[in-house]
Amino acid sequence: MNAMCAPQDKGELALRITEALESVYPDASCALEAGSDPWKLLIMGILSAQCTDRRVNEVSRELFRYYPNCSSLSRADTATVETLIRPCGLFRTKARNIIAASAMLMERYQGSVPEDMEELVALPGVGRKIANLVRGDVFGLPAIVADTHCIRIANRLGLCSTSDPEKVERALIPLIPPNRSAAFCHRLVRFGRDCCAARSPRCGECPLRSQGLCRWSDVRFENNPR
Image (cartoon, rainbow, N blue to C red; front, side):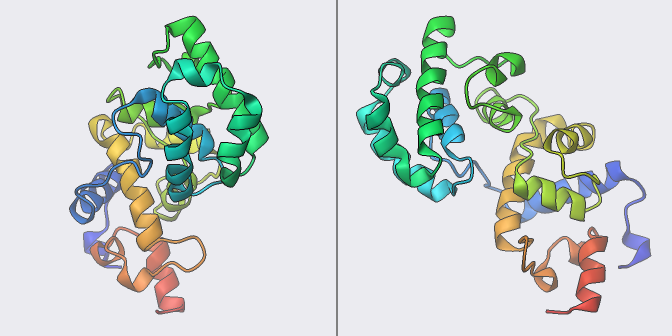
């Protein structure tokens, strides 16, 4: 790495990484195909645990054909929902959660999805990752979605040094410009899939390494170039 190009602190590093990813992925958006419906995004977020976005999109199309809104899913037959979402894995737990979450939304919010973090995480099956996804994509609020890509890449880039999702979130909040944080996380997902994979990262093709923004890839590439 060229020391002359190296950022002097984490704030500068984070800003330059944000700008570099914006250049590479200018149109990055959520991979879950929920459209503009907050409830659908919430349900798909619950279904996405230990499942690919592609599979969730496929399953959700059929699920929402049977249950097109919060009211209908809140009254759904559990066995039917389990059958519909079985390909997502953990289908019994997820079926209970999406029905219960929909019922709670109907009871407390007349079917609307709240934007408050504490209200969101009180819903069955909803943790901070899903809550931040909804807050960022639906309500345009500052939000760090600390998924596996975010955790892995933020550590490799030196923006944090922990694998705990909430600690990663709190470490990135002061570093990433608030109005760019939601999109930043979507770009990390794209970057993680295209280049900075968990097992076989393509450091030789890394657009961040070429700009002197990743010491981890720089060292790894020197030791194992490919």
